[in-house]
Amino acid sequence: MPTVSLGGEPRELPLLEVLRRAEELSFISCATPGEGVALVEYLLAICFAAEVSPSSSDEWRAWVTGKHPLGEAAEWLARQSDDHWDLFQEKTPLAQNVLLAPLMEEYGTGPAQLVIERSGDYSQFFDHHHLEHAEPLPAADAFRAMLTQHVYGIAGRARLSGKTLGPKLTNLGAGRLQGRVRVVVQGGTVADTLRLNLYPAAKGEGGRFNQSWTTGDFTRRGFKEKPPGRSTSGPADLHSYLGRSVLLRPAPVEPGKPVMVDRVLIGAGELLELDPARDLEDAVPAKMTNGHVKPLWPSPTRALWRDAHALYSAARDERTGLFGRLRHLRFPEDGDGPPCVLWAVGLLANKTLVTSWTEGAFPYAPSQGTALCRASRRGSDVAEYVARSLERAAYVAWKIVYPNPKPSDAPAQRARFDARREFWPAAEEPFKVLLDETVRGDHVPYLLIGYADQLRALAEDFLRNRLDSLPRDERGLHARARADQRFRDDMDHPEAPAELRGETHTE
Image (cartoon, rainbow, N blue to C red; front, side, top):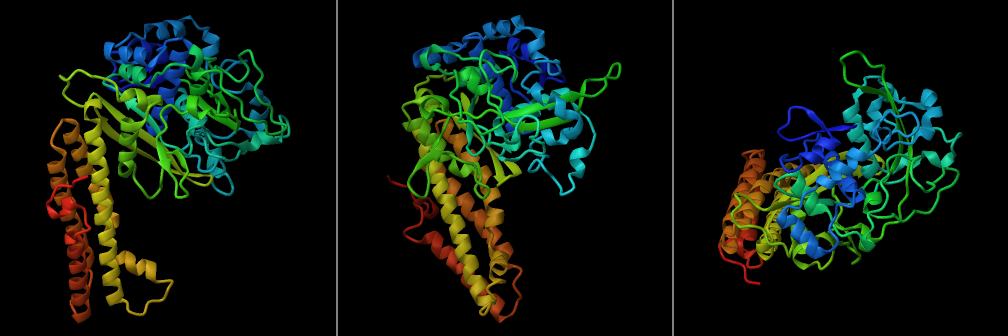
């Protein structure tokens, strides 16, 4: 049975042991945020398949606050056939498509292609050289990487021939979580996290669990032509769906050594037709520029903490789904820290090329929901205003130093004086402190004034450092003085956030 690494554990544990010890294990330790989300998804699928899920929102709240045991999920897993949970089973390898087996010898690549952060656009360099690198991958790592591919895989072309199974085998569809932010509510233990993220299944049906492409009582898609997306049979199906056709080949096993994977194949997988009311439990509504609303999406230019107010607004205002239930919870007040954390994760990609993961962890207590919403919104507003002021100050310096620039040179010249690159990463820590103090019940208006003072001081230092590059001649001194004055004027302007002027904001 596949294994996973856990916080505080020096070794990897089988999935069965994870569920049996979920009450004592603090967290799942993963190499990337996406891998962590994929494992939570898989554990949730097991719980739903075992019919270990609440039947209503009221029962969900009772499960969370009363720490309803999850032992039945572990026992369900223990009763399963070992063959169905074997990564290298000859006919039904776990979470894989054995129909790819005839293609392995000719089209199999090195296991680097399986790891979404390393695989680039599934083609890598022009000559595909390093995809052929034969360095084996531990089976446990390959299992976690495969789960990540299923839920986060990006669109593109598979490096695989479609002659045998059909031309659409090479057409990779975007994974279910690719393109949006997934929010996992984290509790103090693995069991708490699972209970917080379980939910009442529509019609009370958990649905089938996708153990393998060739198991189950229904026919999966073919690859001769692109089929329409299928509806899921329930949350177990949703959280275990096979977003990729994957096949792993084990390397010859040396005595006393762990099992390794030396070759992989990746092709097109399942296509789902998602029901927003049923299949987007955790989605955070966010408005697009055209006024339409879609789930909050990851941005390559905007860290997730800058959109924390969207999460807190959803927790305050939503009436359905995860956030609709979460705001009605009543946790004990004797805990040392926040009762739970909203962990937001997204995958950043440039078309078919993965770039990085983005994530944020935001403390949450239902009793402080309104205060957190206010603190995060005003905190974001203050940071955005300070950043715009830095941009305007940079523009003033640029216009004086470069009065007749070439259009092609202008962006690099302005960037010389623009301190936003240093400001944004530095502003994250004060924002986190603001949220931590808010969730403890401190007075938000005064917290915001202290927070604004910090951001203003940081911005002044970063701007000064940028302007220090100016020569000490008349033009340089003039540019420095005008840029500095522009920034201070912005900070003291009547339309600036009140907190920057040492005043409390009134709604």
